[in-house]
Image 1: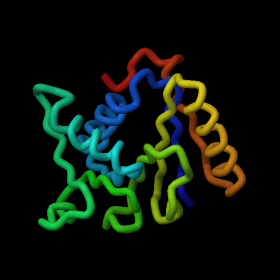
Image 2 (image 1 turned 90 degrees about the horizontal axis):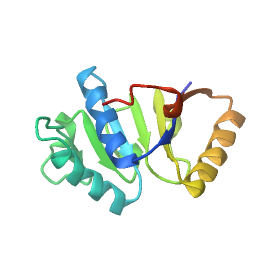
Image 3 (image 1 turned 135 degrees about the horizontal axis):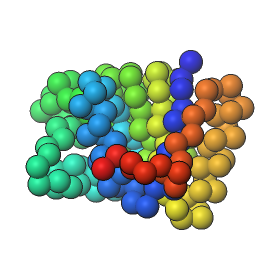
Image 4 (image 1 turned 90 degrees about the vertical axis):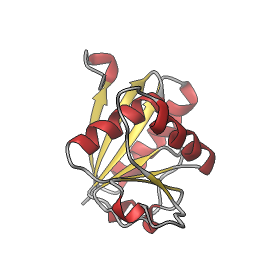
Length: 146
């Protein structure tokens, strides 16, 4: 059964996603990131530029060069197209399709009211499915994956 981690009160979702992906890769995890194409394109650029000292290797699907098979991070609008099944990071406002294929689902929730409302709806949906839900409230933590 998929475990769902909600990271609440995130000031900057894209920066936090980059730091979270860096941490995941450093721990040996394989991550599929799903969301709207425009947002994935932005994340693709940020993964190359967010830190002067770090490089976070990743691939964007569709992948005509076959790099995704060797990448620990795959960005795609359709999670089921990725080969990895360990962690799914959802950057969409909606519930990701095929979430049951993954061991773990991660949701990042900003401080914006609209984002929080959509996240509450996703929380209720996951709870209704009987999934294990875990909260990570950044407002209560001193270390925000810096």
